Amino acid sequence: MRTHGAAHRPTPLQWTRYALGGRLPRDLSPWVLADTTGPGWARRHLTRAVVQLLPVLVLCVTVVPVPLVYRLSAAAGGLFMGLVFSLAFMVETTEHRVAKAGYPPGTAARVRAERTERAQVERRSAYRRDGAGSFD
Image 1: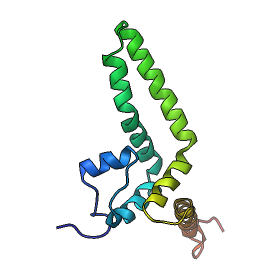
Image 2: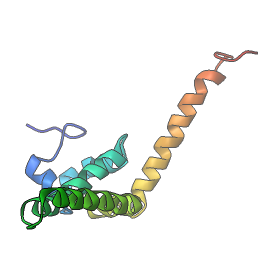
Image 3: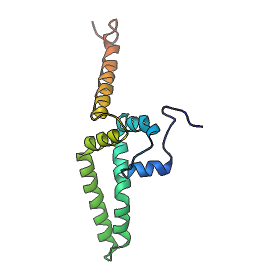
Image 4: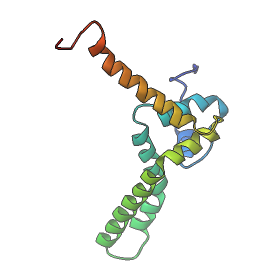
């Protein structure tokens, strides 16, 4: 039995479809928001990019009729360029994923900004409360 919140995750097949750009069921919308805004969201974005590039890389290494060293270097170069483009459009891509999950545009950026601001306040508050951590 699944519960709501962090424990409610997509199945491996649903995640693969999601990584390839597909939509998840509406009941997984909170998970999509957490996936695109939580700690490690950039790493998860790059993981999805590698999953998207994997079929092309496998074809490049297995089908192209040239020596293996050329196929491997082409695959490595393709992976590098794919990840560069993925990084360049990371924010827009995650915003699009969140919008497909049913949230208004700009939600992911707002949630990440709020989380960053909250973390900064928490980091500084320990040094400002009752003089703790200061040299006064």
